[in-house]
Image (cartoon, rainbow, N blue to C red; front, side, top):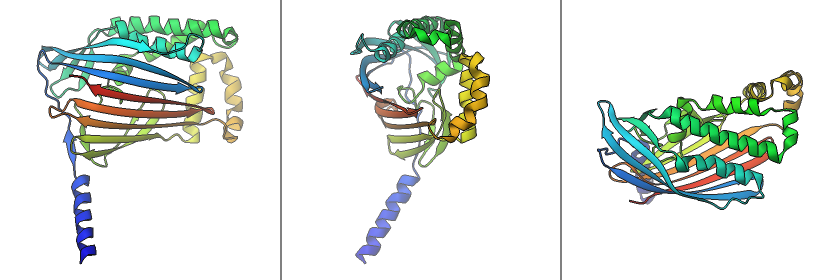
Length: 298
């Protein structure tokens, strides 16, 4: 009898959890402001860089379609070492947000629609990208034998579309990640993290939400991805790579594996109360990882 009762309770709990869903439509009103602390640790090539900042989100205007929001970054700090190239590049890449105010339009449910001052943000991102390219070329001048600064800057510019900027501002390391989403327990979707496509599974338990994602690249998809990247940044090398890529792939030495996990806890007004995300990447035998903690400050 006890076994039957325990089984019934367990089944009931499982069905209850499995059936849960949530529409993340946060309370929004003009003048509302939320401040989040962000602590990010990025590990690459056995070096870890710790980045800390605050993100301030302020609803500045009510519009016919929803709201305008101002996104600001404050109190940025980094423990990057000057003698480590990877650390310097990571810090330069993050510093762009320190002096950039981003104005966006949200719909009535909080979904980010567009970036109002996109051209201004793009200009600042291009300037930051050029600083990173210059740092790279100065530290490793031999790169110029196969890659020109112009080719690298063309690649940087091509990524700075409004669509990609919106993806960045609503990615799983941003408090806006869930705004406007309808999430059901066990739901699966696919998305691109800026590098590869990932398949993600969602779990919902009240106002706590967990998302787990993993890349799924076939041999042909990996081949197409690599050739596309080579053609963009080093077109003169593309034919040689294309002629030999099948042989290289057959060794199994070249692969791209990405996993991402995110834990969210929502406040009563459905703004993010806290979130913690991890991402690990293995590319061409090199491993890197990112761990981010975001906490509502007020």
